[in-house]
Length: 304
Ligand code: FDA
Image 1: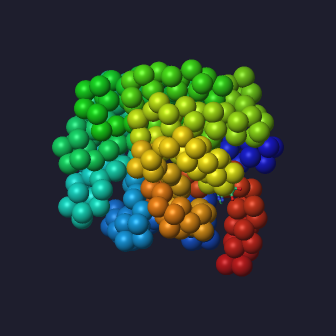
Image 2: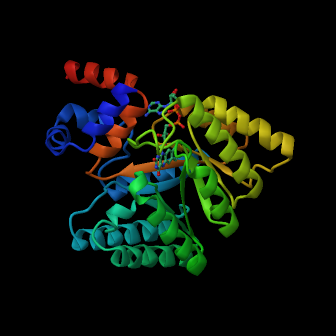
Image 3: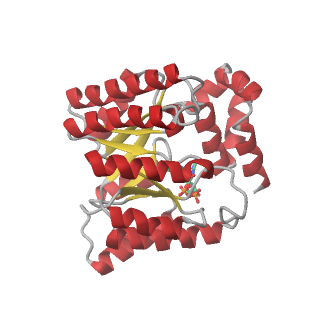
C-alpha cells in the first residue's frame, strides 16, 4: 500500500518525469505497455489484434495539457485517429482523458473539443470512451459524457469500483443507458473517498458488474483479475446473459494468457492500446498496480 502510494505520488513529479522519459532503459521497458510513439505504430497493433480476434480502443497518451492550443492539437490528433481506423477497416474506437482536452483550463472549450470528436465518431460508426481520472474530475466527467450521449450517442465513460460513491453513480448511468467501462481505479485517493482495502474494492467491483450486466448498456468488464473474470463468467451463464451483450477489456501488454483464453472461449475482448510520447504517468500507474513490475524494471535498467 505504501509502495503504491509512493509510486502514484512520484507519477506527478515533474523532475523525475523528465529524467525517466529521456532514459533509454525506461523507454525500452515501457514498450511492454505502450504500442509505440506514432499513430502508425498504434494502428499496426490494432490490425494485429483484429487478426487475433480482438478489438482495440486507441489512446493517444497525454493528460493535463498546459494550453487550449495543446488541447485543440490533441482533438485534431484524435480526429485523425478515428479517420485512420475507419480507413484501415479497424473498428473506430478511441479513449481519451478530459484534462487532455482542456478540462483544467475551460470546461466549455473542453466540451466543444470532445463534442467534435463524438460527432465524428458517430458519423463513422465509432465510439469514444472518456477515461476517468482522479475524483476531482468525477462529477464533471459524468456530466459532460451524459450530455454528449444524449446528443450523439457514440460515447461512454468509466466507473471506478474503488470510489465509495460508485454504488450511486451506477444507477444514474444505467438510467441514462450510458455505456460504462468498469475498472477498479488507478489514482491516489484518500480513504474517505476510496476504499483502501483491496477486498472492499473487489466486492464493490463484483456488485457493480452484476448491476451493469443486468441493467446497463453493453458494459465493459475491464480487469485482469481472474477471480472477478470467473465470477462474471459464472454470473452471465447463470442469468443467461448472452456473450454479445457485454465485453471484457484489458490493457495492452497485461495478462496475454488470459486474453487468449477469453477469445478462444468465444468472449468479446477489447484491448486498451496507448501510443505517443507522454507515457510517464501511464507507465507509473502500471508500476503501482503491480509493484513486482518495479523490480523487473530495476533489473532491466541495471542490465542495460
Ligand atoms: P488487480 O490490480 O487486482 O490485478 C489483478 C491481476 O492482474 C494481478 O495480480 C496481475 O496478475 C495482473 N495485473 C494487473 N495490473 C498489472 C500491471 N500493471 N502489470 C502486470 N500485471 C498486472 N483506471 C482508472 O482509474 N481510470 C480509467 O479510465 C481506467 N481505464 C482502464 C481501461 C482498461 C481497459 C483497463 C483494463 C483498466 C483501466 N484502468 C483505469 C486501470 C484500472 O483501474 C486498474 O488500475 C487496473 O486494471 C489494475 O486492476 P485489475 O482490475 O487488473 O486488478
